[in-house]
Length: 268
Image (cartoon, rainbow, N blue to C red; front, side, top):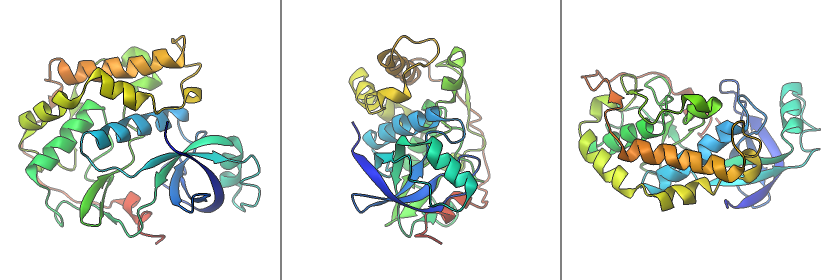
């Protein structure tokens, strides 16, 4: 399991989209961007974050450390914002903490042109996990200590909101991906990543998801069955026909505001 910590102080909300994550301090003296179980589309977003980020880490792509964080039922009582207070009260119990990277900058490919091998690995990995949320408008990449870090995978594995749509060969349109113009080594990236994806690796990653976030999933008898479904899907996508990556035409590099990065710059 992921390390388990306890929230001690709510610092500030990160008003991104409708999920309303927040900066929270914990009893291990760490500071985290916390994603709450009862926000937005609920616990499935946290499941996608764990599976995607922990798989990325094991494939050699940098992602902030994840921990499970407990919220006391009275944790939000002192918050003046009623929306935040209600969210914290509903999310009492287990939530997801993402290590806060102080001073990190939002990624701009024109400022930091990516290595083709790195760009290709990230793009193919996003295709593997159906991650539709790494566009030039919102790259969900941060530059920290000279390295590029992948963040915010809650929109990945979106088929789990309706498991009947879980097609391992569903096309992934890379036209809007922030790294598409630089991803010139896709076949090499596909071979390198797929070779490392094994049943054992996927079992290890899916085992990190708390059982209580998988219980009562419609159409499944147990949390173990849900874990196996994720693993089977990713295994089939990685090792089956790999023609699901589309829009491999030329793209012009574009830039746009990376609003998520603003909230990871040490409290700016």
